[in-house]
Length: 551
Image 1: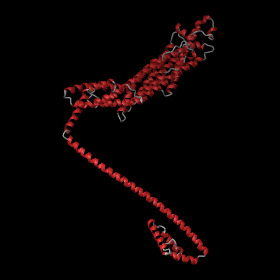
Image 2 (image 1 turned 45 degrees about the vertical axis):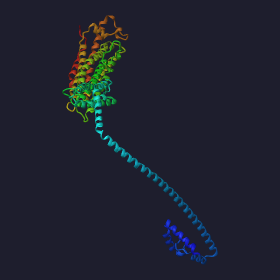
Image 3 (image 1 turned 180 degrees about the vertical axis):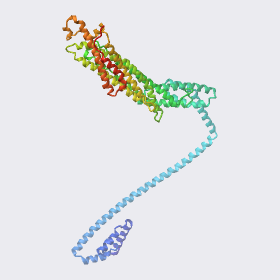
Image 4 (image 1 turned 180 degrees about the horizontal axis):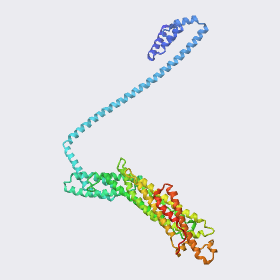
């Protein structure tokens, strides 16, 4: 009877091991062998024998040990029973879930099979209907294609016949880009059928409109400033429109340049016009800056200020900006049309700038000479009367030095600025014109100095006429030394004042000659050779005896 429960338990254990496996069986066997316990009395062994284990236990253990063993066995039985129940429950839940999944898959597959059958049926119906339509329309296919072709031709003919009117409206609305597209679309067809009289009339009218369109696009393109980035985008669009027009039957002249050459000329005309406008403004500013002021109501100690503060610098700065803008805009024109760097840009800029810089020199000389001479006369004429003043006589040397320094400073700045402009814009890879232009600038400076030297020479030899003496004596001052002199010696007083004013002119010549050497020649603004003649002229003027000539 004891064998039946043992067999049943062993069979259950074997089934569990067969289903779940027993990965710890081998280690346990090894461990049992190592511990020296026989397999038939090891409860974890598959060879466990209950009878032998019980007999061995009764023989080996005391009553207390048997009770403890019984308690331990009961605890292990309960634990194993709980584990078994949990294992069975867990696997049962998985089994139920798997069953539900299989049932759901079966339902879905059944539904999918039904849909596939419907799809197969629908495809068969569609194929049947398609075959019927093909058979039905096969007879009329040629007529349908012919009708479609005729319809397209009619639409194209309608478009072409109305093309002149459409182009006129688009040109009036200034929708040039759309008009170009319409003309490009119709040109090839009109050219292809130019043997049909009606087509020829339409083509001739459209050609005239296309040429007018080309001119209007070109004019609009040239009206935009090249120094505006947004305007450059618009100009690029105009260039592309012109390029499209040139790719059609439009012919601008019998001896057309390349497309790039034509557009370049148009844009450069605009650039040159802007440059001419800028240089004209510069000349106006120069004339305004060198307008001779009224020295009569001006305090003597301030008569050097007009020459010192003459605003030619702003005009020259504006000229720099105008030349720089010409160069930049020219580069933009060439960059717009040519991918590689074009050496013609510098040549074109030099051609535009050179005559402007050359024409500016005589204008500057003609305006500077009277301005400078008026400043010198205003200081030197009354120098005699000021020298006779008890309180202000020491201002004369300062005024003479100040007016000469102001003159040389203006001439130095003028020379440096103009020569720099020549170096920047007249020198190219094939021509070095700045050297020749620098010599022209030196001649302009010498011309101004010669005008001053002529004035000084004229004043030194001026006869003491009533007008000349009146300018030299000026209004009688309270601190004048003549106030304390007898009235009968008035003529003597006037002669002294006149002679002192001639001395002032001679001093100006000496100061001017010295400053030319120190500021212009030593400062490497001008060469010594270019100033030799004017220096000698001023030196001779300074050596003239300042005794007033007898009338």
